[in-house]
Image (cartoon, rainbow, N blue to C red):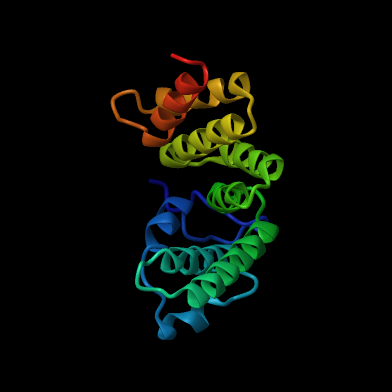
Amino acid sequence: MRLGAGRSREGEGCLGTGIASCIYQWPIQESHLNRLQDPSSWSALLLLGLSYLNTAREPSVNRDDRLRLEAEGISYVQRAFKLNNKCAASALALASVSGQGGQIPLASKLAERAIQYADNKRHSILANGERGRLGFIAGDVADAGPFIAAAKGEDAAGVNIMAELTLGQIAIKNGK
């Protein structure tokens, strides 16, 4: 993994998006919030947003807190994306959230942005799988196919659950 893989438009060094996608799984701690809430650092905003979104998924979080955490997480990721719209991790996170919210055309564009700027294999696989899934949800199986094939082709030895589930749904839809 290249540590300098992610760079802002101003050329400031930042955490690589691969590192960022690992770090976001850490729980939010008050002592870290001040350092992460730098409005000029897209990587810090992305980390904070992904951390909020991840915390919202915890089964122990009540509904009100989950909604608040999701809203805050989305807001931080959107701010990060506005500062660096070439960040695959933020585009992929927003594509997932938009797709879950039923905004399929927007989600598809964001997934395509994530594919275009993916700086590591994992982001490429996830973005292609998400874009294929969105094509299927939109009812366009022909549109979904190339993205699912790309997701599977990137990691032929591995099992891409998203791609396999989408292929299964396509087969069911086609009566096979």
